[in-house]
Length: 332
Image (cartoon, rainbow, N blue to C red; front, side, top):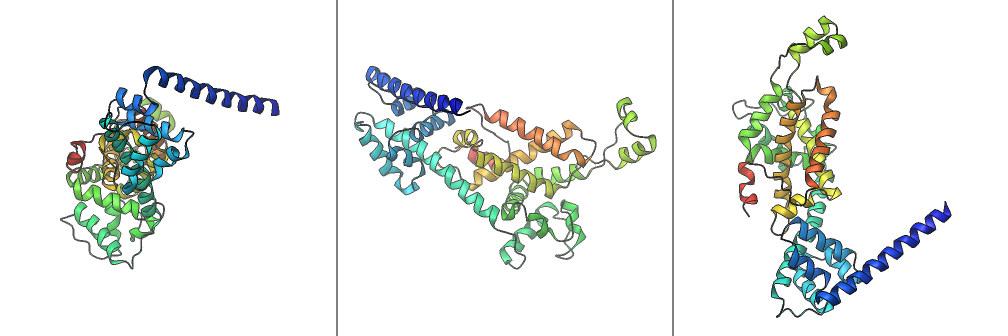
């Protein structure tokens, strides 16, 4: 075992030295450093930004390694430092500075977005906070404009998919982030949000198959086929999809999407717009999967998660929903 680990360590350092020697040779042959080659040979977007990020993080220079975590206000100076360190004349290579700045804005912005989203996730819902209460009531008004809420503590909350008469207990897992996303969806994509909510409540009848007959008695199926909804609890699923979006963000999987749609730093609005897309796509996916009941939720969610991850492996992928809330972002 020790011998195997020693061989792996030796192989790692050998490959690292070989890679640096190769980079040195290519620079001598082309007269360009790795950053120049990436910017000149890769089109703007996720492919370029992710290569720049990997190059800076893998550099032997501490100044280059730390450039991916500077404050946004320090990016211009950081670009100057990189140009100086790489001995690149900005007058001869003016476009390089512009390209590097765009990439760094995205890289640094993504890190800052994670911090902002994490802060919201960690902040618990507080029923004593007027702003929190106002957002919760706004969610009801957007989703049920023609049905006034009779009381703050009410079974009516179940009509939009909360589990009990006080929604505050359902936000424990995702904190304020779950509420922020649900309100954004309901406020900016109102028509789609209301349609998804309506669909989730509709009963669905379908004929029994031979396979299903073998699994259930006729009496059991008769009960299931009439009270089976398309169905899930809208708000609870929204909080669950918030968790999915959060994990995609923190894992770095959403870099592909954000680096392709955000010309500069991705923002909380980009994240919320992505949540809208995921909610709509999950709803369609749920209907396509045609689960027997809500007990299959975890299976369907996991399958949906894998599908999104596979899409995001494409460096040219942009999750482009055709929602009113996203038009200004996609056209940037």
